[in-house]
Amino acid sequence: MEILILPDADAVAARAAGIVQDMVSHRPDAVLGLATGSTPVAMYRRLVERHRAGGLSFAGITTFNLDEYLGLPEGSPLGYRRFMREHLFDHIDIDPANTHLPECAPGADPRTVGPAYEDAIRSAGGIDLQVLGIGANGHIGFNEPGSSLGSRTRIKTLAQRTVDDNSRLLGEGETQPGLAITMGIATITAARRILLLATGEHKARAVALAFEGPLTAMHPASALQMHPRVRVILDEPAASELAQQRYYHWVEEQNESIAARHGGSADEDPWFHPSVDERDD
Ligand code: GLP
Image 1 (spheres, rainbow, N blue to C red):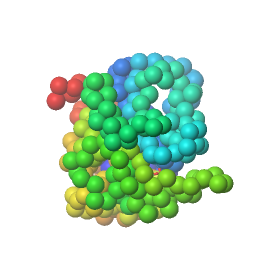
Image 2 (image 1 turned 90 degrees about the vertical axis):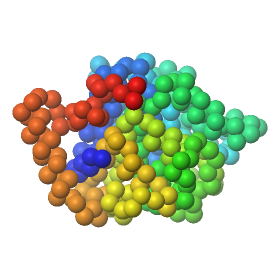
Image 3 (image 1 turned 60 degrees about the vertical axis):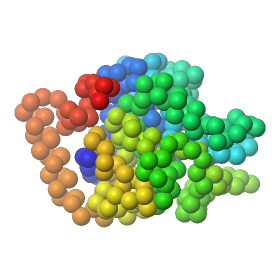
C-alpha cells in the first residue's frame, strides 16, 4: 500500500492520469476497471487531452466499470454509461464494444447481470488496473458498509448516506435510484493493481478509516489493506486525518531518491509498474 499525498486535486489527477497512461502504453491490450463519481473526472480530462495530443491510443483497451444504477428510465442522465461517454469514451479511440458496465437490459432479470459480468471480466483476462474513488461512508463501487469482503458483482441496496450524497447531481424532476449493480469487493480486489483517488476534506475520515483503521466489512475500502499492489493518491485535505502523513511523505522522498539514482520515476515500484507481467500470479 503506497499512500501518496499531493498538494491539490489537480496534482492528483495529473499523477493518476500518468499511471493510467503508463499502463495503456506498456500494455496496449490492457483491461481497465473504471469508476464514476466526481473524483476521477479531472483524470479523464487529462487522458482525453493526452489522447488528442497524440501518442495515447485506447484502440486495444477493454474497460469494465465498477457499477451502474438499477431501474433508471431509459436515456436517464444519471446513467453511468452516459457519464463515461461524456467524460471519456466519446473523446478517445476506444471501441465502444469493448466498454462494459453492469447494465440490466429493460425487462431482464437483474439477478443475472452479476454472474454474466464476472464471466465477461474473466474472459477478458481479468482487470490489470482498477481505478477507484471512495464514498464518504467508506464504500468502493457501491459496496456499502456491511458488504461481504468476499462479494462478487450483484445487486446492492444503497445506504441512505449514498443516496443523499449522490442526490446533489440530480437534475430537476429526477429521483435518486436506491438500487445498483456493483462489482463486489472480491471482484475489485482480484484486479492486479488498484489506484484509489480521493480529494477534499469530506473524504478525510473515510480515507483514515480505510488505510489506518481495522479491516472490516463496515468500512469496505479497508479491504484494500489485503491487496499487494494498491496505490492511494490523495490531496492534502483528503489526507488530513491520516496519523502517518509525515511517514508517507518520507517514503515518497525515498522513492524519488531511488529513482534519481537508478533511473525512471518514483512510480516505478516493480510490483505496481505495468512493465512487470504478473498475469500468471
Ligand atoms: C459513488 C460511486 C463510487 C464513487 C463514490 C464517490 O456513489 N459508486 O464509485 O467512488 O460514490 O463519488 P465522488 O467521487 O463523487 O465523491
